[in-house]
Image 1 (tube, rainbow, N blue to C red):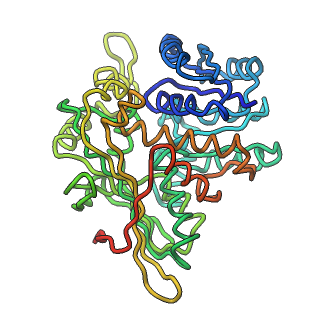
Image 2: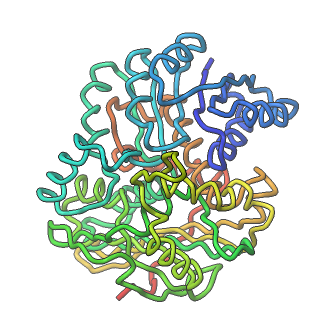
Length: 419
């Protein structure tokens, strides 16, 4: 019998919980825990009549270690799926170690308070030594590797689509298509239209921090830093069409370059429309993307959190969003002494995702891999303990699960390359 706690009840968690409930033979009992327990109750009430999975709910402050330990002690889970905020990764990992629980998340740790002097000192040291300036990185969670190894537990880091599936695609390409990979471009295209002048498809705090930050790519063993949104390309995406895309830093570049040092260049691109770029630049120019608290009428507020309050809830975009996403990896390399190109990707339809899970495709493409990764752990398919990213495990059963449960791969052996 497997017992799972899901922390969070937003769009990604909603998809993952829906998919877990479709596989009651694996997910036999599931506790949905969030700060807003009414959302958990509503989701559980909706799904319970449709599934054999036994659902329960709990109010939890995931920043409170005592509450987490109490919840784990009461429910005794085999796995905790952290589908909330990456700010909370470390404290939830601590609770998992104390209570002997496996762990999974979908994004690398980053701090909520980027002005904290202790964090800032370590951050500045990392920027100087490693050469990239993103607020998120794997170093904090990789420090848990030995602790989870000694405990015989898995901490599966970044098991969404990107990061997550993109890393599995790299492992799959190296296993089946290449003797040596020379270059990798990760392309993330969201061709959906939600009808709002401006909204983010996942948590605005995380999304806007990521997009507005200094960009970076990896080349010849070093990080190359460039101004945010300064490198633009166009690409014709299968199922979507011609779109503008911009080079960003993304966490899987860090793990892939560490695990596959043979790859000479790794870049990450994401598509954005002109309206999104214009709005983001305006918000940044007036200080609304700042994480530094300010005093307003005698009360301290954080600008980007106030902006999050004003923007549409990403979970509300599902019924409005039409179009498709296309996310994948383009490789160059060598197989049997010959140069080769290869493109592996997925196309996901926003409206089809909403019909199945009441969430749009951005949440769907993160929630489905989270469920599949949990399945790999609970079924004993991935067994190597430690705090590890997806590309450290056998990609075949994971990609087979994605093919079967909603995110089938597509392949091209003559893709158009990004210049």
